[in-house]
Length: 356
Picture 1 (cartoon, one colour):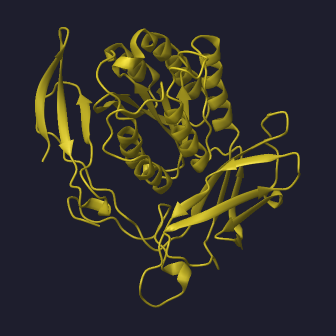
Picture 2 (cartoon, rainbow, N blue to C red):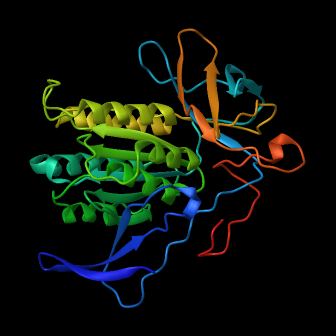
């Protein structure tokens, strides 16, 4: 059950629901992080969150890809025949192909509000606000953004919405304090994306330093794969010299971004930060959507299926997720009907409050 308490911020009072997930859910070891959901002060009981389902009977595995030439320019005019997909080494038939797809886009925008962000937070939120305006002013009217603040708690400031004004006003509530639970944030942000339709992305504005998470980077990355989410870390570089920077944190975020088909930005404040956000918008508008029915891939003891996306032409480079999580279950029937993955499925979700 969620317990609510009152917390003041200046003259404003917000009701906050503290939710502790059962560590037995989905087989995750150890304790899971708290999620603090910030909601407007209102009467009535808190609403319990629904346990994400682990789904079966795969129909499609989705892959979002971006392609660039040697000059780093986006290439958006390729055809289906220009792509090849391999699942555990077995070539797959591409069943769905969309160029510069108009599939609705769900973005989780996470702002690091830990004490280490200090005086830079206002500049970061100003750039993030311009990013949201550009993202939501074009494209599919069903595009939506959810806004999180991240320090020792993961705080949902605004759930998925297309309303820019309602997102922008939440930036005023942010102030730097406490530690950074970055991997916890990626985990919970990924879970919020699992049941969203269309394309999904997580944009993280941070200094790259995780100091508080109970979730490991591997668990956070697995959650992103299960949600089909592409990760874009925007690591604001406080100083250009490696000395004094959290290079290890940057490397972990880069590994996670590349594994999901995204990329890491290392801008300074000012024009570089604005350009990083502009580049993310451009990439999200120039994506290819590929999907396949898993067929003939080699079964292994590892739940992680390795994916390789190739594009014809030595001068072209493709960025796409490097795998998805699945497993061959006991029982009869063809192998492709016994794989469980975080993609569209024909299975039904369990009843609310029950284990999948």
